[in-house]
Image (tube, rainbow, N blue to C red; front, side, top):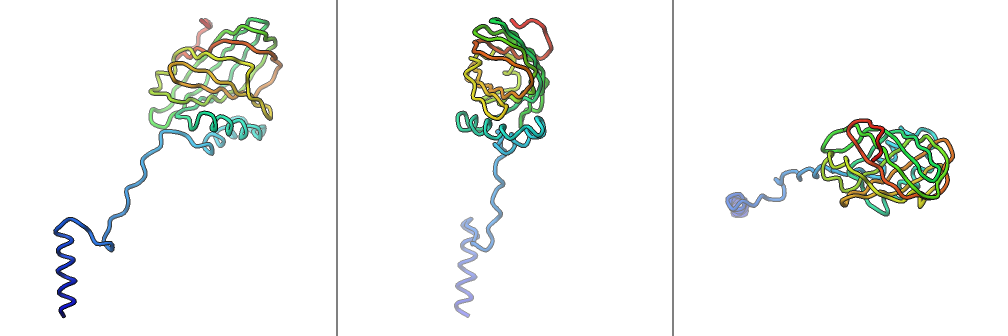
Length: 194
């Protein structure tokens, strides 16, 4: 009887002091929503986008993740370009983000260097440190030709204002060399790369 009274008094004291006994603890809070994409999510989106040629995609994505971490956005689209010392590139696609929705984007850009040929490519661009979807609309500068290339996929990196865009391309055509240039992202298609 005394033990029952002591146990009851102890439980009442715990409830009165705001401490819940172990057998009545509430469920833990759900983990916070992620605003980045995991490697598996990017590879899955890439497999659906690129199709069966995506064996090399996993290796290129792994390289990008080891260098820059998890992106908070990515673009799926297509582009075409050509060069003979001076080059041009045009493309369009959709920017996907977790928290800010999807947005149609266009890109164009000039390049200059030891570069010749033409190509058409399906392109996935990993986007890092994007503070808002509208921040994509600017020029991203980089060196093309210093690409990491494996299994039919090429990867370069472009930067502007602490935002990094990593285009991963797989396409047809032949373009060889190294060049410096930029990609300018716009909300509407334009022929003016400047």
